[in-house]
Length: 163
Image 1 (tube, rainbow, N blue to C red):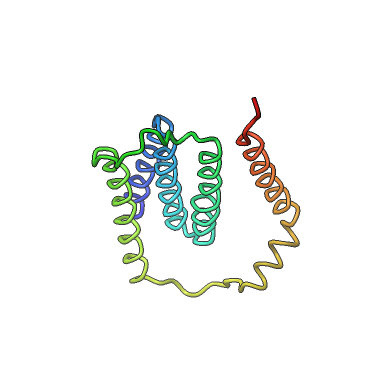
Image 2 (spheres, rainbow, N blue to C red; image 1 turned 120 degrees about the horizontal axis):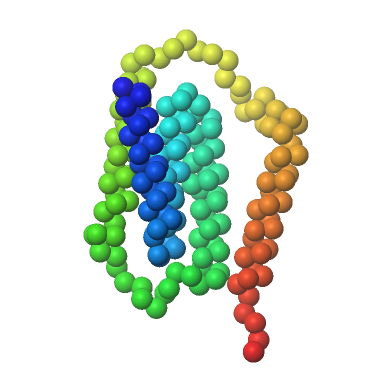
């Protein structure tokens, strides 16, 4: 069953990513990209990596998408002049993909809850944070600097120039 769920979620990831690439409206593209990120998080959970699944949801589907929305709003790429309520045809692909993701996650959780393996060593918060900021401290700082440069670049591109 897990192999079938993997192929279903992989199909959802590919379809959502293709829709994100081909969508003309940037906000709709971000919705499809978030859908792809959530499906990828479920795939990570399926591969017995719940921590990476949570990182995928928190960092990529959360923080990076908020940064993308910030850039779109700063550069006024959303096309606010034609702002109207989207039709069901625009919402239907994202709703179908989200439904498939939620159904797969529900099947996966119910299948895993019936067969819980013996508890392995799960690090507590202190041990995890110590490892994260000692062993991977430089990588964390590099990533934070990249996000800072992205925000500064968005502010520079979005500022109004005097004619």
